[in-house]
Image (cartoon, rainbow, N blue to C red; front, side):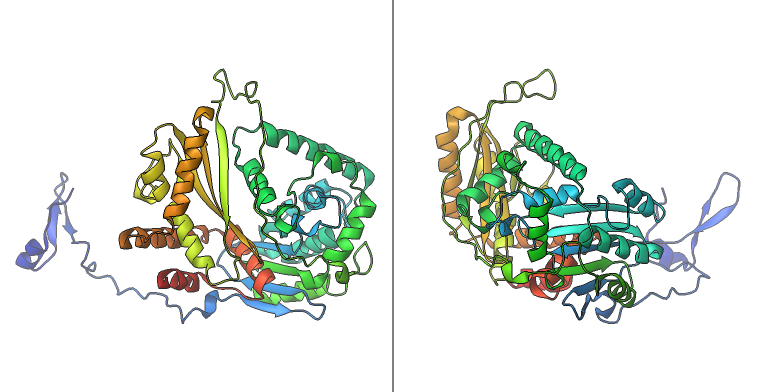
Length: 459
């Protein structure tokens, strides 16, 4: 390595030369000093935040088009619908789960799923559909040059699905397999999340099953799906979101493929939409499971009891949403075998007060679920069945101590960690797409990352 100081540089007044074995000399320049003979660099500058602003246009039929430009050869485009398991009060539960599995199957223009995938392959594209309790999201990532094809395909997949009998039968098999897999999976978190919602909002809105109950698998057919789609898949409840494309180009494609399109189920009937507000009821849901024959290898899975305790929090539209996100970060936690230092959350309360003090605890993790009218702050914990009582007391104590005053350093660390996680996640194009789509669908506008960071710092 080069051993060289600013003092040496000043003393000699010129770049000190380093002698090589060949006899030639090469000047060694200190890293904070510009290289001699090289022109001064000109750095790009951004005028305010307008280049990164989310642009939103509402079409004549009520559909919103939102876009965020981002440098790159690829774009992520999709349709988000204000429809999910919370809207199934008047229907057999499981419709949203079925629609997720049926997505990107045969449509009016495309004979099969294979044809859709081959069309996307020409533009280096992939497609996916995900449903949650309140949103259904159809998304495609592909080359920017294929935008016209992508929007055409999305419009067809969402508004013109054939829903053939054989496709519905295949979906029944896929749903049954997923339910079986869910019950055998070593990670209990998806099942616990389902149970905590069922306990907190018994029989209403976000407490309705996210996965299709086994008894409803045979009940769901094309006629029922069309009846549901007629109410919920209308332009006023949709957002076409795109990241990595010009806004005008996306609006042009939306007008071409989504403006005067008649869906396969006929005219929309948005008057039948369920507008129930989430009613927090509280309660207990228990399940006994024998995991003795489920193993990933010769070593059996440890016999553990998993609990999740939750309290009602707030909706993502309220001002208290940010403080709750900071509180969730401050509680933190994770598995007892998590590796890493301060950046991995080792200074969070559930590590310091629970996992570090009680060696028999396998897990203690905080979660925050938020919706347009309510929310849940939960702690998931795992331990040996003989220590359930003690585990419940310890977690309950952590909830009680939340009301105490947080230390300034502890609070600042949680805020910094939240901002860091937010910014890191928003490096990814699909995450930006989901953020743009969900915010515009829920509020009609989008808070930019720097605005969210300012809000976090304020509290």
